[in-house]
Length: 238
Image (cartoon, rainbow, N blue to C red; front, side):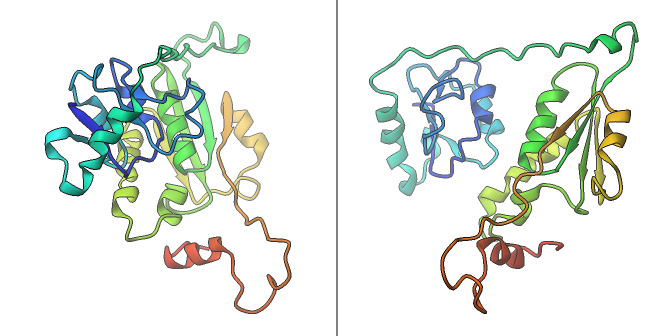
């Protein structure tokens, strides 16, 4: 088996789209993608190109000859998950963006998209948009730093998980990408302002508050939500 998915897999499917031979499963098109704890590589289809290694945001894909003794178990696990073989649907191609009727006839006019939020969902959205020609993306966030929960929701000692920000850096360096940080929509800019200066607006703000438990004692001193604790040890700006 040329390459193996190990325990650090975050199942975000970046590797799936990078694979030229569709050997990483389950794909987002397959019914068990939503319930899979990790992805696996079909050893009979993999051509050992290594494209998935660079695409994986958490360094979870390793050549079989570089597995540590503790990772050897994943060699067998990947093989078991890919047996028995099953028909795999081809990855759906990304259709070209259809321009709005009002944009037609304006030669050279880029499609300007605003994304509200600067976490993983926002960055992956920007990446997909920038794969199209003639697209400019501006990412807005009320915080002075980007990356959302990848920065403020992951424990500082989880270095491999936090390495997803290396992938974000590649996205940020693409032509047509711009940040507007420290800008709160509804305070500094209105929704109408975004609509007036962009062809489309994507909201990727996630859940900004906790969902409280409806049980006795949650209001007592010393009772805190997980969000409060995680924000404290990550030094959240709020």
